[in-house]
Length: 564
Ligand code: ATP
Ligand code: MG
Image (tube, rainbow, N blue to C red; front, side, top):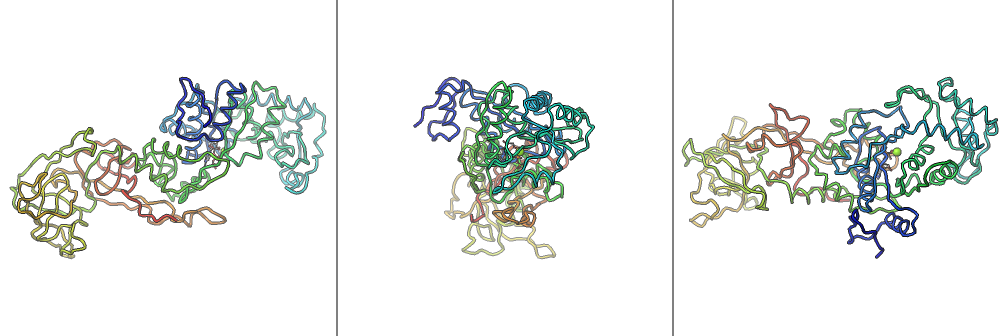
């Protein structure tokens, strides 16, 4: 077992083997290469955060907590075309809701535009950058391929003064988009295509959500990210695997610029979840084309969707902590996330009863005005206290819990002459039933078996089943949104599949006229409950109002999916 750093800030879980980033940090600390661990989470504000981002958040903030260091929240806002303040606000809310707090102020790549520009001028003066006038297509031709080297741009050796002046004109808006770029002068024959004179700045005459129209050029990710890390003193810059081939470029800028620190980049495998897509572009398409009810639709794999659905933040953190931090991409089963959700909800969600498809039951041996206050535990963990259930002559049970005729196979149901126990209440016995003109059972007449609260009937005829119920006089109407997985294909966007074709047409089912306990009228939006025998639910933050109570299904009690 490797040695871990101790100290006040250390929250290392000694039961788990160290991942490769922790191993690197330990040896950096031991060798004195770094004395404080500083990480960052760098979202681009071009969409809402999804479950994949949660892995990166838990990793970066987790490392800072574990080693008593800092984690910065830095918006990677270098591409104004797709970025909006709405996304910035949503990301801030999601990170905090997940339970993390960044060190210091929120940072923005755009805070460093001035410094980056000076460093660009510095590289030009050093003979290590130049303004290039090849257009995008020519640039592609000159770049070469994986097997063939590229060719030098005809502008590569233009005088330093000329590049400085042209860069200034680009910045001031005197150059049209697409006509010029600033490029680093590295090596057009490098086997690593990232090093073939990469673009540092492009002309984009687009206003920026923070800097307005101050800039007409914007830095490329590669020219921005490492320098931002250096400015902020980031020690371990953790990103996903697709950036591995950019690492030599990250290092090249750090080596060739007078930066205040020497950060290093490490890449880990991104989280891919089956039955799901984790690309902001695709999630945005689902929203823009109206396939879902916004970024926070409870079926979306976004943090805001999971929150609206009633998934506790701790379940997401536990799931992320269970994932391997490895140097390969992996596919994780949706059922693994669902396991952590059920586990958390089973332990902590208070219990309630909601009848989804109400069927009236009249206890003919009780007086019309019968009202009894029954006590029921909030949870099997009795420390959570009791709730009161008003019990009256008329109650509702679920249509599925009644059968017109008794059958041995369905012997847990109520049927004429047969008994069931009302959950947290008495045993009742059905007498007969009433049908409407369409032949549907609309009322069951029953009798209450006396003295059966908490004990078996004195005549020894024990009920086989237990059913949930609510008082017909003391209940509230609600709508219940039942959700299933958004995609019915485990790999909706694999290969050249169109992920829209894989949308599960039955991913939302709306039940109206459901009946729930009066106590749930004031339920807090997002607070999960177990509706006994049905699953986990929470009040919906968007569709609930003073007139309408709406519950989202967070998850069923058990999975009905057979895993691939
Ligand atoms: P997308 O592909 O959804 O647009 P992105 O990588 O462009 O994602 P960013 O906003 O740049 O999104 O991501 C912020 C951070 O989150 C980055 O460090 C990125 O590597 C990480 N990240 C993004 N997606 C995942 C994922 N699926 N698994 C793990 N980390 C991720
Ligand atoms: Mg990105």
